[in-house]
Length: 332
Image (tube, rainbow, N blue to C red; front, side, top):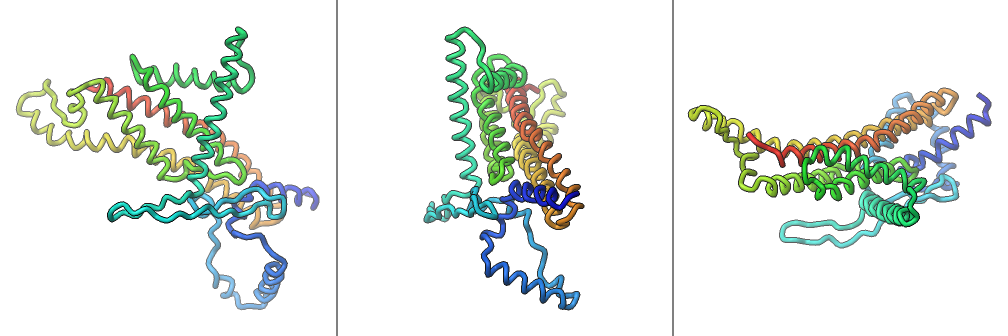
C-alpha cells in the first residue's frame, strides 16, 4: 500500500472515530506534543518494567457510558470540541437527592424526539399533499409510510388481537423512537442512548404498564387470574397446592418480560459499539499496513450495526405486541 493512501485511510478513520479520540478531553497543544516526545525519548532508555508502570488506558468504557459533556464537530484537528453540559443544583425530596442536570444521553433523547417529531410532521404533510393530488407520496415519505403500514398491519394488530387499534399509536411511537436513537448512535460524534440501561429500563417499564392496563381493561376481575393461579379444571385437592407453587411463578413472569426487553435492547446496542471501538483501537495500535484488517472489520461491523438498529426496534415492538395480546387473551 502506498504511504499516501495509508495516510488518507488513517485520516478518514480518525474522523469517524472522533468521539473515541475525544476521551482525552482536550486538543493537544505544542507544549503537550513536546512533553510527549520527551517522555517517549526517556522511555526508550528505561527499564523494561517501566513499560507496565502505567496501567492500560480505557478508551472504550467512556465512549459507551453516560457523561456530563459531549463532543461536537470542530474544523480544527482533532476535529472535535468538548462541550460541558450545565450542572444544576440537586433537588431534595425527603431523604432522596435527585440530580436533574442534563447528561449526554439525555441530550440524545431530546435530539431523537425532536428529529422524530420533525420527520413525522414532514411525512404527514407530504401524505396530505399527495392525497389531495390523488397520488401516492414519493421518496422518503413513501418509505416511512410503508414502514408504518407494515408494522401496524403485520406486527401490531395480528399479535395484539381484535380491537387492538388503541395500542397502535404507542407501539408505533416506541418503534420509531428506538430506531431513531439507535441510528443516532451510528452518526459520528453521536451517542447511543439505548446503550444506557436506564433508558431501556424506562422503555420496558412503559411497556409493562401498558400490558398490565390492557389486561385489567380486557379481563376485569379476571385479571387476578394472571397473578394468582387457580385452575378449576384440576381436582379440588390439587388446586391449593398448585396455587402455592404457580402463583409466585406467575408474579415473577410479569417482571421477567420487561426485564428481558430492557436487557436485550441494552446488550445488543452496547455490544456492537464495543466491537467497533475495539477494532478502531487496533487501527491506531498497529499504525501500519496491518491496520487495514481492523479497518475492514470495523466497517463491516458498522454495516451490521445498521441492521441491528432496525432489528432491535422491530423486536422490541414485536414482543411488546405479543405481551399485550397474551394478557388480553390470558386464561387458565
